[in-house]
Structures are given as C-alpha cells and as structure tokens.
Length: 301
Image (cartoon, rainbow, N blue to C red; front, side):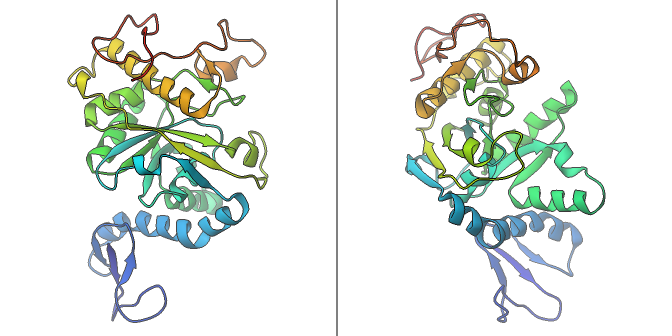
C-alpha cells in the first residue's frame, strides 16, 4: 500500500485525516522527505487515479469490457509476461482495467518526449495508464528495452507485451518477434497469452474518434519455458518459443495467421504476403527446437 503524508498533517482522498492509501501500490512516501521517493510513487498514484477515477469509469460505461475466459490464469503475485494480440492502441487501456493487479506496458519513447503543454499531458497520461518509455531507434536501444522488460518481471510485476511488435494492419495475427521469448528465458517467468476482441472496432486504426463497442478478453493458460533455461542466446530456441506463443494466441483469438512481420506488411500494404494466409504457427511442445527456417512440427503444448 502506498501511504502519502502531506506536510503538516495527513489526509486521505476523501479529505479525512489519515494516510492517503492507493491500493496495489508499494512503499510509503512522505512528500517533504525526498523528491526521489515522490517521483517513484507518482506513477502508482496516477495509475490508480486513471483506473478508478478519471478514465476507467468512462471506459466501463461505454465499452463494457469483460473477461469471458481464464481470469483465474493471472497469478495473484509474482512476475509474469502477458503476451497479447494487438488490434488497437486501446488494448493497453482495457486489459489493465479488468485486472486487479497493475500491468506495465512498454511504449515508444515518442509518447514521453513531446514539448509544451501537450507533451506534458501525454507524459502524464501514458504514465497514468501504466506505460514506460522505450527507445527502439537502434539495436542497442532495443536491447535496453528488453532489459527493462526483464527488470519489470524480476521485480514481481506483470509485464504486458505485444509479440507482433506493432498493431495488426488488418485484424489478422502476424509473426511474432523473439523479444518476448528472450524476456521469458532471462526472467524465468511464465508467459500468459491474452486475446483481445473488439478494440479495433472501438478504436479503429486511422481514426481519432472512439466508438462504443463491447470489449471482450480471453486469458490463456500460462506457458512454461523452463525447459530452455540458459538458452536465451540461441536464436533457434528463441524462434521456437515465439512460435509456440503465437500458436497459443492464434488458438485463443481465432485470428487468421500471417507468417510475415506486421511492420513489413504495413510497409507494403498493396502487396499480399507470399504465403498461405491460413498457415498456423506451430510451437515446439517439448525437447530441442527445430531449425529456425522452418516451423516446429507440433503445436504448442
């Protein structure tokens, strides 16, 4: 619980005397004691305010988000990786709204570097909905983003991640990037597949307007990759684990699978991928992974 003590006395969010308690936060902060501690506590306060006071009630009213399967698969404590399909920016808003635990999503650093009043509001908003900035401009920056993901999970938190790397351009499920597998092996945490439904209708790509539409969520059973412990440097292992995650997402979401990266599909929207669009990603069930140039021969187990 986060307890914030004001100068000259204490008060809670209702105006009564006593500590200000934010459910789900960790630590105790006295405003006059140290700016660093206040800065560390501020994201937790913003997250609680956005979820329960400012944004959450409106999202519940207009979109009626609901977990329709697998709520019991989210651990009550400890680190875990929530790997989701990605249909819209709003995916990162609706999933945390329906979970009792806080979810931290990496977000592109551009959301946090804007100037002026608009930039300040963006930083406040995205911090408030549980996102942390990552720089994807170079290989070293990308590695830094992966390291941040590992740190979040090792701290016992829930890390939200989109294996496709970007939003689906057409509602189909695209080839996963291996970063999610690397984080899973380095952290030792389970990967929990998440399927979002309806966010692309509520928050269409290219539209600034949101449209009321029911949001539904399915949560799959945790995937354990401890059998590959110590093999995070093996690209064949990483590809096999990623394929297994994508297979689980495909089964959970019912989406058509496309065996190319979504970013590449966005660069060439007029060109159809050179593959069987109904091809399914087949994850390695057990044993040593297969060659990186072909998909393993059994589905995710």
